[in-house]
Image (cartoon, rainbow, N blue to C red; front, side, top):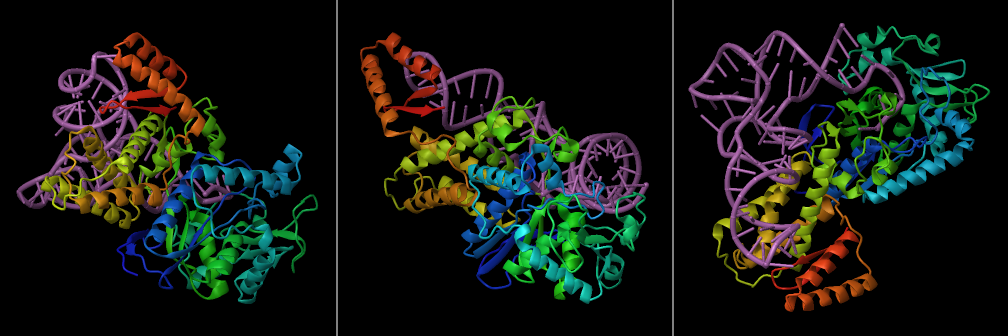
Length: 498
RNA sequence: GGUCGGAUGGCCGAGUGGCUAGGCUCAGCUCUGCAAAAGCUGCUACAGCGGUUCGAAUCCGCUUUCGACCUCCA
């Protein structure tokens, strides 16, 4: 496969040329949501980021199997302070069946993903649906001597692992530091070492979600689900594993250790981690109690929100920043993104309606060259670790050219037919296919269109008679009703519905 | 405390040795009956202090400061 895609690999801390294991095919695994609560703005980032990764890989011609799990058994803390299934806890609070609650938040999550125009995963496995696979993997690890059972719980022996493998390489930490943790946590006494993590936890009697295992009734440790499911659907070694930076340790580090022992080799060729969304400089997260839920974002119903924001505005906002940088929430910034997204979409719309006179030679060679360069650079930017921020910047460079052709500031024959055609297809490819943008307004129905055209015709007549009182009244009243009229240069009148 | 990463113009945010990032805001202009939209023009920043270099936002050192992870977390 011929392409120049370079990916920043968190494992090696450098950009590497991407080569898939099987030519033409790519396996992508992304850590999905824990469906014990509603998704918030921070969750939007990885799913939009990796949606663009998926889209770009497909654009390059890869057949991609995209696996994104649903953690529906809660994240059981291996040495949890609560030492209890969080899903169960919340369920009691809401007086719901655990599976009922899990279903509710799964549905909400899917709804949000759809609004963001994220492509659905090829496979969306659930943790509870893969208990057998997880148990089997734990058994293998025990057989190989890297896990031990205590009181119905199974722990991974990190010290033993670290003796022969580079434990801590992904997250850049030293085992000795981990062992010095002074924190006193539940289950600590069961472990041989503080750095050990649970593969399986014995379930206390009140625990609702429980499964039979060789070690008694219990539930799986958090990290094992991703290892079991990714290897099942993508193979023991697969191409890309993505997730938030906050998962690097201990989650991903543990995944590497488990899989390395169970399968005899490291599981992932390219580790990708998106940075966090912050709010007032602090990470947005449930532990900080500073989250803005997706539903609040879309409705504007939150004290920190000056207004509601369209899902496409959020998407655009996120893609305007490189995925490895932090992104600070702010109304001003969001509003800027809204205007920007509108303007870019407008330019896209204009471009769709433009036609080219057909001249094979550009009358403005410099502009023709510049446009070609801008378009070509978009590919370079995507290849450079998915630099969507730069792609968007270049699309903005093109907007004045497009609008200029329409407005007459740029001559229709300034570009050659070939360049114009390239502009048209490329703009579409990058904005729609790769960045996954959609219009911010829904398409209007035929009936509303008919009604508005009646008013527009009346206004045209009034303008012809120089009856500006009437024409302004129509425009102002429609504006008050949320319909903006525009008098185009050619005498036609167009409208946009807010 | 340990490890790691930031600090860029009014705001957001790219960018790793020399070339205007881009967006939003603001001001002016063109177009327009007036608007809106669009186009054009202007606003030229890189936390501080040293150092390397012909040349540094970009490399090195120190300082200040913010944050992430070390515990569930996207």
